[in-house]
Every structure is written in C-alpha cells, then in structure tokens.
Image 1 (spheres, rainbow, N blue to C red):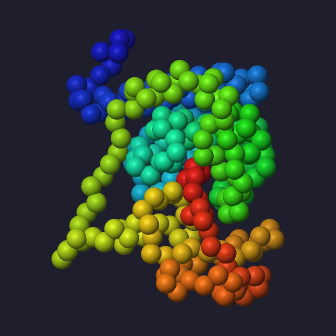
Image 2: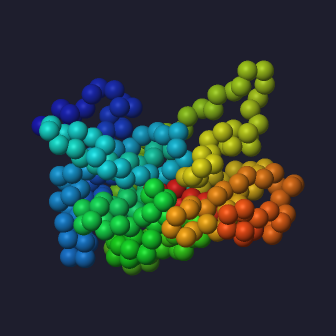
Length: 265
C-alpha cells in the first residue's frame, strides 16, 4: 500500500497520522542506535507499545503507562507525546524537546521490560536507576529535589548522533495542538486564574512559563512512608522558614521548578 493509498482525504487527519508515524519512526531509530547499551528496547517498542500523540488536560510533555491498551487477547503499553508544545523548555528547539520526551519515556519502557524500579511515589520521583538509563540513551540529567532527576535536554554527543533525526522532526512537526481558552461567563479570563485551573496541586506535571501569583512549597517528609506535603501560598504572604510541617517539623521549602518542571512522567 502506498502512502497516498493510506491517506484519509482529510488534510488535518492525514497530518496527524503523519506526525504519529514520524515520532514512532524516530523513536525506533534512536532505540536501534542504542541497542548494544539497551538490548531489547527496539523489540519492546515494536511489540508491546502503542505510540500516540494528542491533547491532554494534564500539564505533561508525555508519559508511559503500562497495560492501557488491549491488542487482541493481550494488554500493551502506551507511550504518549503531548501535541501541545507551547510550554516546552525555552532553551531547546521544538524538535529537541519532542525527542527528549520520546527518549525519556523510552527509558521507562526499558526499565519496565527489565523489571527495574526506576520511579517511586506513583511514578513522580525518578531515582538513580532512571538517571543511569537516561544517560545511556543520551539525555542530560539534572537532580531535582522534588522529582529526583529530570531530563531537560540532550547530551552534546546525542545532539550530534541524532542530528539527522532532529532535522527530520524539524521538517515533520507541522501539526501542534493549541486549544483556544474558553472565556468565563461575564468577562475575560485572568491569565493567572486560567493557569491555576490547569495545575494539579497534588502532583504538578508541567513547566508553565506564565507567572503565577502563588508560591508552591513542600516539606521534607521523605522517609519512605510519607510523601512530601505541598502547599500553595499567595506570593504576598509567603515567608521562607516560617511555615513548618506538623509531621516532619521542617519548614516548607519553595519549589523553584514547579515540582514537575520537566513534565515527563
């Protein structure tokens, strides 16, 4: 079947299918280039993972979710890429941001296939094992007090090794999701209020670039039994080292990275 035969006749839908095919092809090719270091990743992606892209109400660049699709009589996993790229890292191109997300989630794919526990706290905290895999696949890794490790960009050697794939993404990412914000009845939405409505205070998942009128701070409950408690305080009322947690008795510390600055789960 030719590419022309597989089109729907709907320009936007065809563009979406082409983007899904593009990111899947790029992901598989990066896995092939790392097959000596991450054996089995290509086969797992081909046989057990649905790669898809679209919109989401979660402020996340993407995610890996186990056993979320049914293929015949078996369950397969999902690797999702958020098609809304308006809140990407400002220091990297759209193509690199997309590739970083794909590779970040591929690390979770490989860890799951090899029964490596690379996260905790319901997948929010990325541990040392995750960081090791990320470095092998070509991701820069930074420590983060709230999420363990985050992956903001490619390593220099990976930018070189994947340069052809980055160029392919630059040319092919012709469709992005940019929903129009609905106006509330009776007036125009306040930018900060709209941003706050999209934030999951229990577990922040985005890298919102618009300023917020709130400070988010967390305690130090990290003894393996309790998760850190996160509070939201109006910026005008926030005072460092004043509010203390009743459990760990430590002062709440302002999160400078939005608790999930990387947004990749």
